[in-house]
Image 1 (cartoon, rainbow, N blue to C red):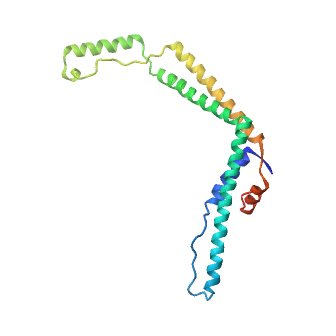
Image 2 (tube, rainbow, N blue to C red):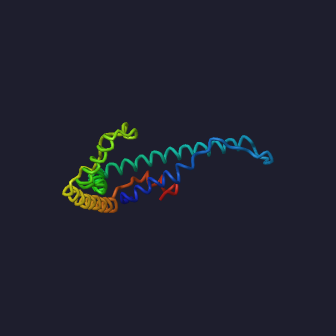
Length: 193
């Protein structure tokens, strides 16, 4: 059975959600008012527990096989390198957005000089509240030209991320993987597909 990578990921998720979360019964009980053969009921419960454990193990192996097929296909189709490229762009975008966001707090040279003069005058007056105050004036050290560059890079980098997203979407929908028949049978038996 051939499925897209997107569908293979859904199947992998469904195995986890539907099948593996059910668990397997290792304990059973008998109603005291049921008049049944205890030996037969214990035997049936043991068989059911054994079948559930084996089925759960089959599902674990099946999920592992599908995960491996997805990994191989991701590598062969270039998806892994595309994801790495997208993550790099996201980190770059974060830096440029920090520059643009910080530039919003920029002050003029006159405002910085005014802040320095005011602090210096207060410190020279010797007021007790300024004796322990820091003797520095902080300012944003970003030139307007560099902010323009940063804004352009934010847009360019966001476009690059969007392009990666589009390529990933297309590759996930169009790239097919072959699911072996034994895996397909296990999935069908458990109602996953």
